[in-house]
Amino acid sequence: METQKLSTKNLIFIGMMLFGMFFGAGNLIFPVFVGQQAGTQFWPALIGFLVSGVGLPLLGVAAIGVTKTDGVFTLAQKVGRLYAYCFTILLYMCIGPLFALPRLASISFEVGLSPFISSAHQSSSLLIYSVAFFLIAWLFARKPSQIMVYVGKVLTPAFLVLLAILLVMVIIKPMGHGQAAVGDYASVPLVAGFTAGYSTMDALAALAFGIIVVNALKVLASHNRDKLPRIRFGLGVLQ
Image (cartoon, rainbow, N blue to C red; front, top):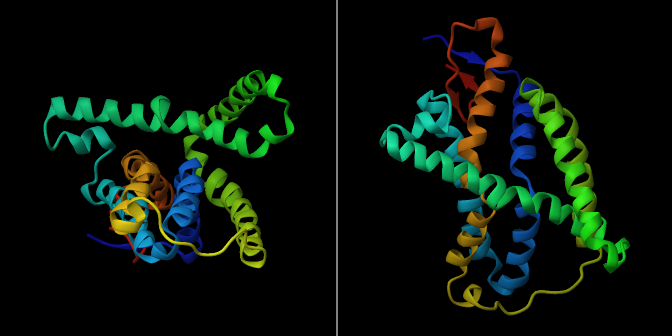
């Protein structure tokens, strides 16, 4: 089967889209928490965090592309149909209404608006903000074919600029210095970091996001519609 290489520009867009989809509330919370708790055991904790917070999500997206499935349900059917139903429902409940989605609105509200709102109006303000937040997200989600434009070309570059400014300020004006590790980070920092990375829920989300990436690649290769994309990460090849 012939291969088709993506241009460097399209590879960058796909990479930014992946970053934008995966970087959520958990990615803001847990790295800071790991740094505070790990202290002088920072490096083993960081390795554990990267394995579960970066490595497993990458493998999840790759699994969708390599197996040429059209979603997590089809992938799970390789185990069994009943398993596929149970796993898919639990997966979307976890990355949806049970865990991940509620903290998206609450974290951004807590960090950006809560300090400027009186305690008497916190609950009502959070409700209004949450409705507006998810309404805007729904409007963007109505056009999944434009996800690469929204996330890869607009939101992520803007976010990266703001994140770079934040990181520079952290280096220039740090809030503290390294200290002794506490809790599990003192005894098993690698395992504690791994657990924190898994808590971002990116490893679970990867199975749901993988099909979005594959569909984006299909759009980029739409002039060869007879070829089913198969992702080779790191080579940028559609096969």
